[in-house]
Length: 253
Ligand code: PGA
Image 1: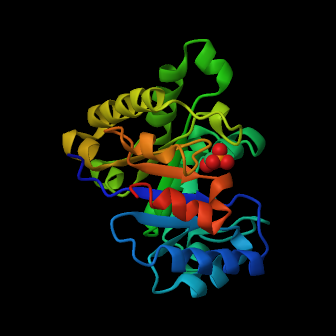
Image 2: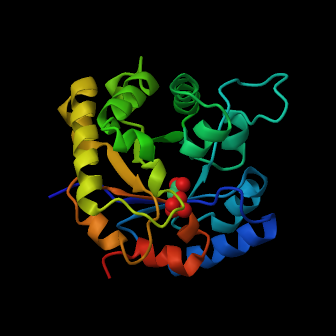
């Protein structure tokens, strides 16, 4: 039996004003108020974080950011520091999402620095990795993931890894309606868990949570969660609607 507590996160991307964020967060908190066996996290846009924190305080909804910068402070126009996230109530941060890599030049190296900055500030990183369609078709999926993990997590100790969450998000499945089959996802999750075992040992491999992301919906979460190495989901589109997202969180019912 898996003893890892499922973690289901909503990535709101560049959607929702402050008022819309607060409204959705409140609805969600009410819908999942009885949920104790799943960790529920939402990552609203930066502008709404502090208000959403106030709205979900004391509920079972956890708060995360969608990005972070690694410097403490300074002349870095437009960036958000770890301390700023903590002051807004964030305890989680999504790092290295494929959209950040694709459109904003993030690399395994910047991902590495961001993870370090998050950990140093008591923020739990949700580290995203995943192959593109081209890479999968060329038979390079495992090479790509191996590189993303080894470079992204270079220099970290098992103690560090204990405070991380991984999210496998095949780029071809994000926002496309094309989900990886549960068997395809399981194959990759097992590969990742073995890789983590080689890097950080058996205990960490057994306890680290590996989420799946890419077109997760209320009607496919059940079969994904039935896989032994899938410990939760990182949900984009379907997390924007509180009712739909609650349907994913309540995957067992
Ligand atoms: P999606 O996005 O659920 O809309 O496919 C997932 C993600 O980008 O994390």
